[in-house]
Image 1 (cartoon, rainbow over the protein chains, first blue to last red):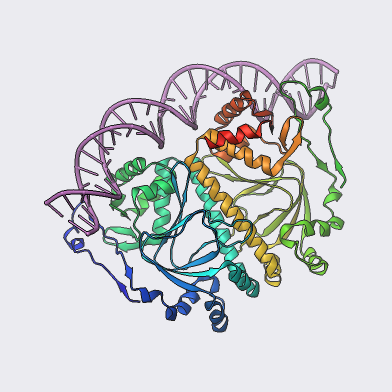
Image 2: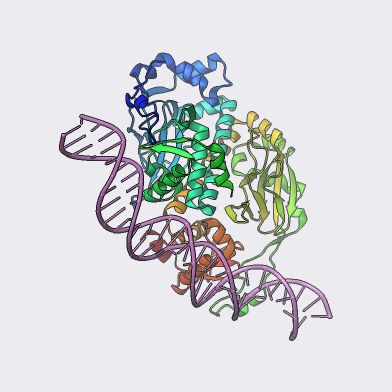
Length: 263
Length: 263
DNA sequence: CGGTATTTTGATTTAGCTCAACAGACGTGG
DNA sequence: CCACGTCTGTTGAGCTAAATCAAAATACCG
């Protein structure tokens, strides 16, 4: 993979400082990473195509097209007519719902291999959320009708997609539980644990969450205000549980974090 | 259908009173409604079997077994090993999550034709919620492995189940939005609208929600306390928007209700 | 280096929780 | 059919978590 690590020069200088700056790797991709010749390989990595043989994969491959988006780009907007199913191949994407009152809800953050866009042509003809590139990304797209054909031809794919969707439903309901029963502090702790499990990587600072996450993102994930999210993060840092800065978080004391979520 | 309507004698007497008593029909079913001879007919009504021909249906039918539960019975408990997929044939079922701290979350209320239990044998070997009969109910059950076989043999079924699950995911995320952004009053108003659309029937009192719903149920659906739910319901009744009593609600002014939810 | 976006911190306000007591409805058994 | 016990809903008062408003500090970007 031709990934350019844009190493920040200060990352060495600030190693011992109380609050380090941008320890995240912000990978940028050459556009050809997202090119035709790599699609087949990528498709085979996607969970719901994993059981297929080369011939089947080849067939499905022809139905997909590949696109590149830069960090911050919007892949589709909530309310747009929904017509594509997408598979994230590289980078990370966030799904956001906007409300009339201007509040946002951050529904999910995706990593490579996950699908988004619309699945079902049933009734819902608009995207129910906005998809935004959180880093530079590469995305494969397939038209809904074509995807239906694939599902019909390959029951194992349909079953895999069903399993994944069911799992997401479970996660969404868990989120409802958190929102209904826990204090803001505990909700943020829970989200940090989840993100660490999904995106965390071992570093000197602890488990670094490999994603640009702002206070507003945290607030939108936990249904609170940026100010409150900031206060909670300050407390957690004060308590030596996390290390954090602008758009990044690392968990330095996972044990203590999980203790707090119980209590 | 041999359904006994247990007509409450007071329903006539109290027609003009400010607050009527138990206007709900509480149907009880003779156990043989849930018997073998009716299963086939019922299965054909289930959304995801609708496209199948008689022969296919017959085949699937043999894999299901029928069970009757009385109002208040628990069909399965959160944490039990999950092994069955269930289809509600008659009555209504509620899905509840319990928390360590003793708070409950009411995830969903089901009507005939909807499925519950577990879908995916993937990883999750325990029910993530408790299913309780809200009225007398009749339920068809199939073992997970058998259901997998059905899915594999009938792609159209797999696709239907996927569509339904996707729709539920959308609903769950909508619920997350409500919890994250709206006041308790608006959340209750939103739930009342939803319930009216799903379970409402035209009556003299207005759109009567054909289900026993307590203040606690409302509270557990909206993530609030019974006291607050009660206060909101009192206000709504005061404002002439709903009529309500013990375990029942009717919406007398739907227009005004939807006005309130916007504002 | 200056401008902008993000984060922090403080002060004030408030929605909704909790605790508490009571009232109305239900149903059960005598 | 009535009396009684139990469950469900109502209402009040005080308290607290978190929202909001406001302003300053810090990091990042060109």
